[in-house]
Length: 124
Image (cartoon, rainbow, N blue to C red; front, side, top):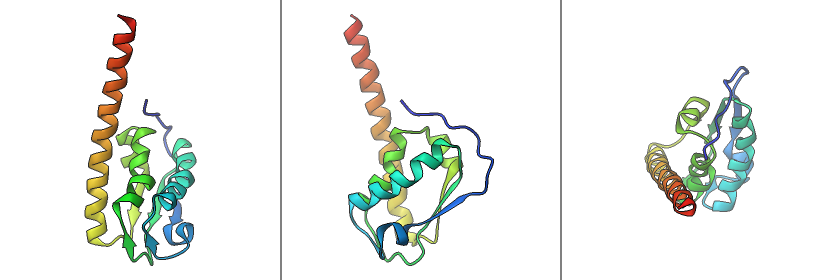
């Protein structure tokens, strides 16, 4: 179930992706997990987070699925939209991010519906 976060009251936290992945390539799900693990506690606190893609040369969907797509299983889309932003991302990477977000929303919506349907069947 998606978690509801409290409203943000502090300055945004700027997370430099280059520092977390230790270089200009965002090509592994493991690195994406590292980013997600860094920002989940901040979002749970209702903190605004800005992901900076400064100095990043390559971003692939596997990284974005792990870094951002996974958030849709933890939080409501409205909260993610309100609390999370990206900056200095290349236009083609923004397109990939848009697809990742759309797919994550659909996946977690379907997964939630399947879990609820499973609960109903168990009670029958």
